[in-house]
Length: 398
Image (cartoon, rainbow, N blue to C red; front, side, top):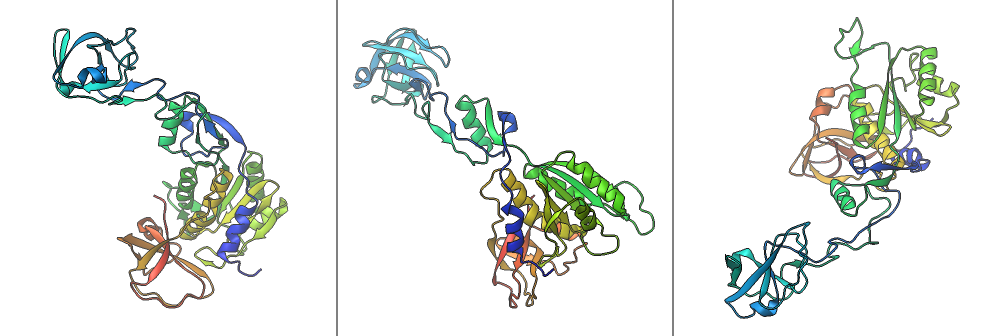
């Protein structure tokens, strides 16, 4: 099978990914979820004319000429309206959020008033409507303020609460089963035996998936035995999940059993080699309705492939229209040689618009991955570039 361009691979991964069904969740659980319906306000905000300042509710015509002396006939606080009416020569003490009493049409701020007992002297005029928030200033009942497809920010949740929605209809979170393979792997905290290494890939990938809103179920490390690999895949299918994500075992070695195990379970293979570096051996296909991604075993390869393919898949299943990664522009901090037929994704630091790839780009080096701010994208057959030349980058998630 020939190497597939990155753009074509991404198109295949996301082509069959439809937004997951809707569910209604409490506001506190809706952050960064995607709306599957338009949301209209259930109330008008503010529901009545209210004061925007602390001061006195008066008639503008009574304070046109200053100083003006008025009689204080009552008090208005937020949540405690005044039942009376402000007539000629009268005022009502009012606090921010208080409902404007009948008869009053403006607010004199307390800094422009001197009170003695039940009399107040106004020292500055106020025009009609001054310091009053009119009913519906923010929104009115029936206004559609949050649209289908919107990924909800914290500010959106505050708006939804003000609209009097306690729950919101959002697309279900994608569920992912993550399966690591390899006899050489041991969990962190254990002493590796001869030829063994500490398993690390799953932590960055699970964190990345969770930050995009997915629910990750870790199925642990599966030994390099076909029966065990098949059993893990069957267990993941029965969970049930939307994505089976394997880490390692995606190449063509004698102990790379992922493809064989998936094929025995009926995988409809889409591709398994991509024209990119790091990360050429990436498997993609479907097990009935389940999306399957088989990531390479090297830490950097696995993470870069997860950024380029897993993240867009999660986003599209979550209902987002902006699922594809969007490169940004920067300037190279060092010179780079001409590229070959594979697209390069070079780990780099980013400072004040200057992206500086690390000299070493070995796909096993966790340390440099942790230090990187972005990936410098080098298209296939890109010519040599000088320091200062424009380049495309993908910023890495925190």
